[in-house]
Length: 53
Image 1 (cartoon, rainbow, N blue to C red):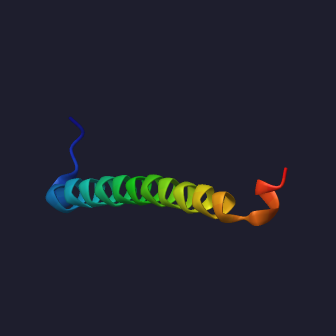
Image 2 (spheres, rainbow, N blue to C red):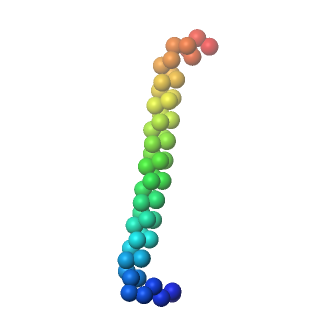
């Protein structure tokens, strides 16, 4: 492994923190996209102009 010097613990935890933050953002984006899709489907189903077609 690369010698990170006396700050090795900080560097490793910084990378772990960034990985957790990125994973959280990806998870939040996926959850929000699914929620938005559900809301859009619900709104489209309630639109009376679409029922006439």
